[in-house]
Structure formats: structure tokens, C-alpha cells
Image (cartoon, rainbow, N blue to C red):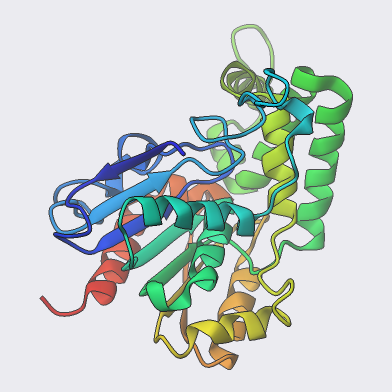
Length: 315
């Protein structure tokens, strides 16, 4: 399982686990959360160890559809088994065990990463001090399932070309009307193409260059399966497992997020609170939409600093 660890190990300092979003990698500190991970930053690697692993089923070093199937000697491809965020969480605990990390001071992730972080906490409630779930519901709702259905149909019918178009569609759910109007409006590029169209085409091709359809299908299907209440008696009953340990559950909603909006995040927090967990809701507004947790660095710095301070307690 590919992973990156920054800062002191578990024998020297508390440990923080970060979980990446859909097409991300283990390189939180050097890539997708670089502005908030490192010495002196919100997640200060002078004070805590920070671990991030590529999710099970992923493209960047962990077993997934592009990995070699020992039974055939070829890549798994479409034969890779269906997985869920709970399976991903269990794989993360196998890694934590192997690294000697018995307790996680704080878990954090956004979107699919937030879903997996929820499952990591619920798999071993007494081993987690704080859960920070950003722009992620307790169970994926019908509208997101509908968008994902269209994406999966495109991938299944047209392979890489379908993944290109699926990525373009997905980006329209990750951002916002205000963001697109402000950045692109009705502007055109030198070739006469609408600027927004040029942007979407570019982003679709970027994913084709670094990803593959079988992995995309596996991860989107896993995300669709997210429901912390499955086989646990429902969402509220699932979060009841966190009450005895005193683990703090923080749901972060983004006003302007049309994919997993504030109402869905607030519903998670309300369910956790009814279950007796120490739960609170935080919301911020952004014209970046769902992707704000990967773009609004000043806001994310403030949220992460506050969460980490609470997780670590008084100095």
C-alpha cells in the first residue's frame, strides 16, 4: 500500500491520518494539501506525524485494477473486485498496524476522503481522537448517484474517451456557477472556442493522461456504496460507537457545494449528536464549490489548526 509519512513517528508524537479524494494520491504533503502540511503549517510536522496512503483500488501504488493479478499474470482490469469505503478503511488499518500506529489523534479527508475517514473512525472507535469530515455525507444521496451513473455509463461504453467526458461532467459538479462565471463567463480562446469548453476539454485530457477507466470505475462505484449505517443499524446507530470514547466528530459543509452540500453534512453531524457523540458542524462559503477544500487555503488552514489544537489538547 503506497503511503507517505512526514514528521515524527508514533513513538515520538501524536499521529494524523489524511485521506485523499477520488483521483488523488498519498502525496498530501507534497501535492494536494501541500499548503497546510509541513513544518509550521496547520498540520505542523514538527509536532505531529502525518500519514497519507493511496486508497485501495487506486492508481498510485496501492493494489487496484492496474495491478497484476497473480492468477493470470495480467492487470486485474475489470475483474478487480467491487470495493466500498469500508474496505478502504480496513486496508488503512492494516497499514497503520504495520507501521505501529495504534492510535490516531486526528483523521481528516474531503469528499471520498471524508467518507473513508468516517469508516476508519467507525472501524476502531476507541483508537481515534478526532474525525474531521469535509464535504462528505454519511451516505451518498440520489442526486450524486445520478451524476455518477452518467459518468459510469460513459466510461463503460467509450473507455478512455468516456472517462474524458465523465471528468468534464464531474467538474461541473465540483465547482459552482459563480466560479465558472467569474473565471470564464462567455469568453473565448484564440481558436474561437468558448473558454469554459476549452477548460473542460483540457481537464478531461489531463485525467486521461494520468488515470485509467477501470480505476475510475472502481473508485466511483466504491463512492456510490458509501453508507456508514449499512449493517450497523442505520446512520445514527453507527455513530453511537463513537460516544463512549469521546471522539470528536466535526462535519465541515461548504456553502455553494452542489455535490455534497451543507444539508448533507449537517445531517451527519445531527445524527452523530443524537447518538451521543461529541459532534459539531462548521460551514464556510466559497465560490469554488465542492472543490473549496482543495483551494481555499486560508480557510482550510484555520479549520485544520483549530481541529488539531483540540485533538492534541493543552500544550
